[in-house]
Amino acid sequence: TRIPKLGKTQKKHNKMCGIVGYIGTKDATPILLKGLKRLEYRGYDSAGLAIINPANNPANNSANKLAVYKTRGKVADLARYVQGKDTAGTLGIAHTRWATHGEPSDINAHPHYSQSGQLALIHNGIIENYPVLKETLLREGFPFQSDTDTEVLVQWIEYMRTTRNTDLFHAVQLALTQVVGAYAIAVIQQDDQDIMVAARKSSPLLIGIGEGEYFLASDASPVIEYTKKVVYLNDQEVVCLRRDREPEFYNLQQVEKDHRIIELELTLSQLEKGGYPHFMLKEIFQQPHTLRECMRGRVNVDNNSVTLSGILDNRERFLKARRIIIVACGTSWHAGLLGKYMIETFARVPVEVEYASEFRYRNPVLFADDIVVAISQSGETA
Ligand code: GLU
Image 1 (tube, rainbow, N blue to C red):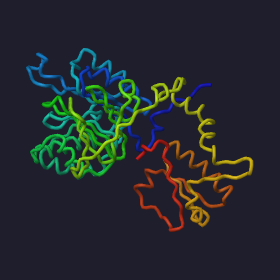
Image 2: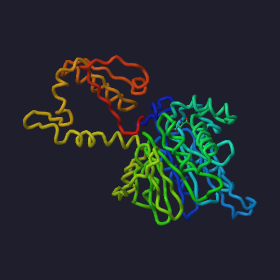
Image 3: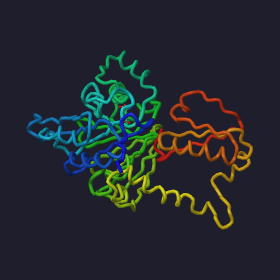
Image 4: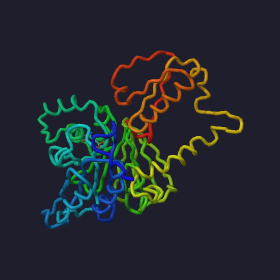
């Protein structure tokens, strides 16, 4: 059987793609490229990386150089592109982009520089209030190269850093208090090759804790071959990773936060394609298993009953519901359509299935006795 390829036009709404970061003692570029490869399954249209070439490199006239390499296309294209370029350095960040603001192109690919060339930033997500921030920055004379919301963010952090005369860690905290949207970000700074700052809201991000090194990634797959110790960053938290120091976690109100180190029990192969040549096949063949797992303990064939404890507390509301609205994206949306047929057939309650991205931005008509069921397949969809 021929397996149809998932075309670009079928892209999902609000998909967040990949982030990898490294600070330690090893050469960062191979780790970053390999990490991006592991995140490829998330889908993307361009890839890029930023690395700090250290001052002791004679080619840099004894000053650090912040080098950004990025291209539209695949991680393999990026790997080819950096061949023969100066990719020395033990601190770097890398990104796969799924364009939301501005077409997929070399210029719109991440990382993005700040105007001074001091900062480079990668971002997964959407900055919703970027037009107001950009207006202020344009008035202040900041130039823009790309059409992205992300470039606005890196300039905004630079603006905070210079006008408030503060360090990168604090500047990121200040900048994010004024940002509306979803983000996982990582920022590095040319004249300090000992620090990487990262933050998240609604987009996932974790830190891998190794021996004298830290990793940053959207999920565990780029990290697991180096360390099993990870910290999942909480929503609206900013972390500062410094060489030879404990990571520092702060919220946007500049309050220091505790963090919990988790030991991962998954192996890389469990995380990956499970023996199938690609993820779509794996997911198709996993469906019977997944359904069985999902029904186990809920459907009782012996006494012909179904117990859904998750909705038990709201049983009365379900019974009184005038209408059910299922809100979902992509594959969950398709599952929602199937749910509509089943609920309407068996329960005779009208069901509407809506795209979450539309539902979120319009002003939907909702009644007190409606029930809204929100489905997310991974918990990452905005
Ligand atoms: N909004 C950003 C852009 O369009 C990031 C997209 C992503 O999550 O990859 O460049």
